[in-house]
Length: 580
Image 1 (cartoon, rainbow, N blue to C red):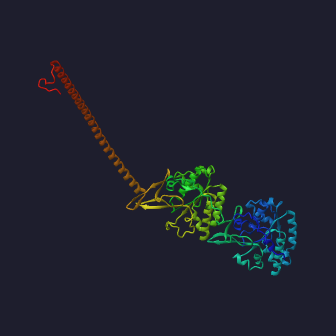
Image 2 (tube, one colour; image 1 turned 180 degrees about the vertical axis):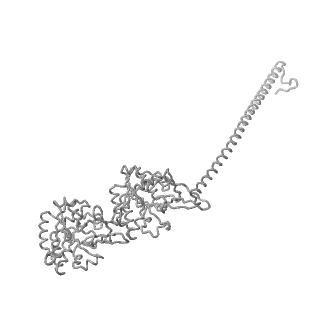
């Protein structure tokens, strides 16, 4: 027997499977030039996995392949795969070859056979087409016909050695029932798990009436891999494996750009709107306007020219458009021009994983940069708590990695509180912004209130606003407190009216006082001008008097001087007046 360690000593090259997610958890795909065992129960997707592996090799890797079918005819396999759009008919002409190897009735009856003849024929075919990949589908169908365990081991070793000798990247599928990891060990060919270089186990269970599929890589020699179970889905393009966030995955690009929520005052409360690429959760009871707020966001995104996907679990798209139009949110034009795609998720059935994969596919097809899911809480009923929480985490991770601004709503039970106690989603702890809507019942009225519970990376408002819906759209009004009680609705209107009347009365009193002061000021100014005129007159009169007196004294002095000159006086006083 040819030792296997010669190939193990080489660097473990990988053969890409073309299966979304699987190549991520295995670091590149199946071991190149080695053998992989794929084990799963009925309907778990073994044949689809194997066929997709061959199709990707032939179509994208220039590695022709051979599919050896022990259970179904090649025509039936090709017909079943038509819905995936793999163009197998075209590939069969040169790079994909099918071998119908179902056991004949005579072979079943005798049980005396080996794989030598078939492998010899395959060797010729490999040489003709240069095949590098090969699949033995449902090999157990043939092995169980062998007479004893020794014959089974002999043929398995024969096949293994043949694969190694031809350095083919081989994939062998086997059936298993119940717990695959244990039931396969109990079968005569269970030792194959120890012989191959890679083993993959597929599970398909029903939990709470919902189908749950998962995949686990049991072993992978010479390579690290994700050892945990990963949910998978058989979608429109075939096998799709959900990948959780890994430590070596690059962080998403972070931007400070803001996008509008569609409500001006909410943007103000958030300091400018949501961050682009952020995840936003809107929680509230039924009828608190969660859909309206998410619709306002969708309208604002379309108005900016950004392609948007709106997924509704409660109503059909036309119903959502009609209902939102009643509050001034017009989405029909954006649906017509193609920027907005409305999807009713009522048509999607299955697990939470199914919802996530379908929505991701729809978003990628639409090239959406904004996504609305209303409400995401529907997923809570589509699987166990652990799987649902994992789906929520991967939804956030995916939207951030794609740079998609995500707004999702969550319906709260009427009997629950604000906290998400008992909710399997637990999405509020991982979203960036959490907006809560509630009712306030007082004075015979039920009014809506809005508050921002958290918004990472921004100084948001901590106040409660009353959310008002009208033909003009969505309005956030200030609330009032009186005696520690928040007033909304009519009580708020009465409070606003009283404040408005008091303000008007104050304005009137101020105006009246101002008029009186203006009159008094004008009177004082008149009086001041009169006094100033009188003062000016007095000052003029005083100046004239002083000037007249000075003139008189001057003339008197001149007269005396003249008289002394005329009398020849020598300084004696004249008429009893001494000279100065």
